[in-house]
Length: 212
Image 1: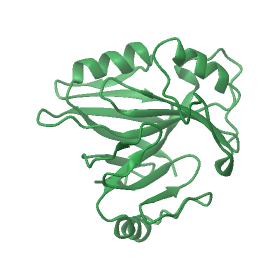
Image 2: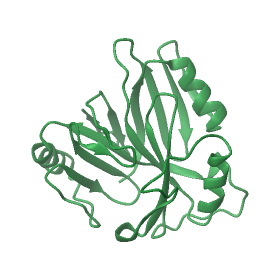
Image 3: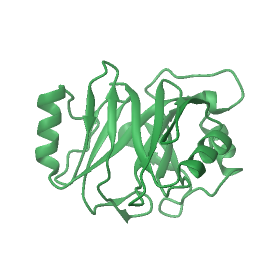
Image 4: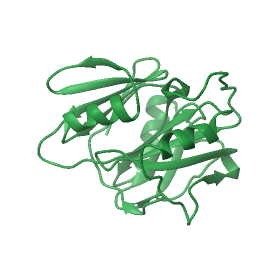
């Protein structure tokens, strides 16, 4: 499953534009007074302005799997990496993956993840061009089992074969793209900040849209 576009909300379009264009060095592909879109590999990452709340999300970028150390140094020179159990790099043996986390200007919990089962390589020095795609987005809901069933039946998206399937957290999709269906107020790794429900739209590769 590939995420063609991810549409999130921000209460500061100007600061979001600066963060993703200057700090993350992502090219702007579209811009209006109410929204800005960035090229993140195969995915378009769009933020739309909202005035009456302070939305935050968890999402992840797939990174070429031979440049993980370089990606860490690249981001560590720009901002603070969030610790995971006193370590700056998290290992996920069940997923054959490594990752690290940081906050953007909105307080979004952003993750760079390398999935060693994917054939993503680069011979170039690390840059934003080594971001392959948005590979995860957290969907925060009141009823996880009901939402999982709706997505499975309506979009034919299966449970992620590497798990987990819990009562309050289920991963759906594959290594290219995952929907992390999360219960409202469940803590996000690594900050344990309680998840909250904010509008999010995921556009799949066949242009079908999932909106929460």
